[in-house]
Amino acid sequence: MEIFDYRKCMLEDKAVRDQKAEEELIFRMQQDARELERTKLEENKEFMNQWMAEGHKNWNKNQQKR
Image 1 (tube, rainbow, N blue to C red):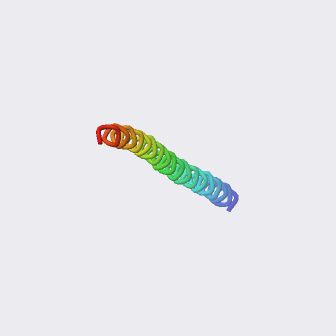
Image 2: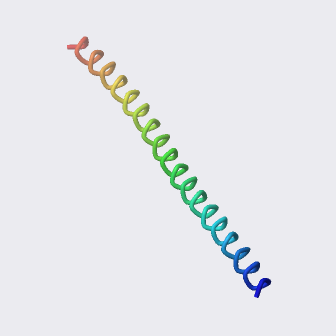
């Protein structure tokens, strides 16, 4: 019976370790997805700022021609 208890304890410990590793992997994947989304938003923000600056510059140029 002692061998059975030992193996049972070892399997339970392995199950706990595997579960923690899986939870950490899921957490890292979520963090990576969030970071990717944040990067994408920053790039979009930068693009829109450049687009608006160019639009203002063109608008000013058009206003001066009139």
